[in-house]
Length: 394
Image 1 (cartoon, helix red, strand yellow):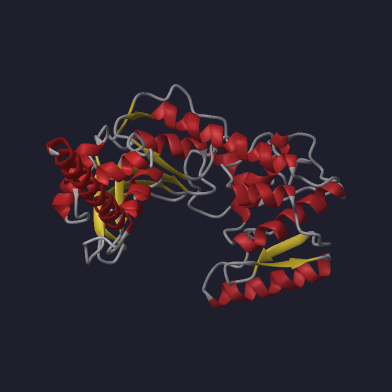
Image 2: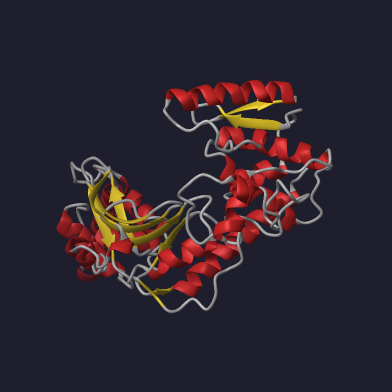
């Protein structure tokens, strides 16, 4: 009888424990997948090499999760415990633990916190310090500095030392390889020497996430890898009948298109003008190539072209020589490469500035002369000289 009572009590206790365990599991699942406790957005910062235990405790301290233990158990159950990605991530209000696991293990660009950006532009470079507000999710500029002016301001210098600071390099379309190398030399969050300037056109304009003390040569190698991949992809998808024998020739054309217009929608039309000229045996007659022959990509020509320069024969003076110049004249972006390999189907063989930032295109010399006359009127109204060579006069 005693043993029967013991067995009965044991079974009762086991049932109670099983019910309690099931209830605990159900509660944990609800806690893990249900709305989180934070009423406001939060910036969650994952340090390099951080453990799941440390991150779970951090989240509980911030009030982003209700239980560090449940967060760890859920991440383990999702098989995400070893997938933490370094960075700073914006977590929306009442985000569930399941959502937070997804955010901090997906990787990608940081979405909150402090970021220091080197922007490499055609006419100027800048180092920006920006902070994002967790409440709004909007970056606000804190400081801006011209790296050629000397040492970084204290705020930027201090920010880039933060272990969770996001460092980026953003390269604009149409920048030359020399300009990129010189800009990289001007910031101290990169390291190492650059043995030589990469070939013109070989670097992809893009945004690059980097770590502090990343080698400059390694960053340039990544730029080159991306540009080669873009060119190969666009070359493979090109239509028949284009006047290019090699991808390099297409890259040269893309660089010309990039320098002739800053309006994305115009690129296929500009490309069509030059493709039509090549196919008709006409010279390209484009100012940016002449300018490159003068500067060799080392800086900007802060004036208009002179008649004497247009009349001087150089490999880059497409008013004087047939066909394409020997090299690209800048680093074109993907859209310019695509335009060079997918030009618009037009009969245009001329274009000139139209006063709005864009260009007026023409099929005949008569139409073109009328467009030039209108541009001269605009120049006169603006008080600009009207006897200088027409910039962009395809």
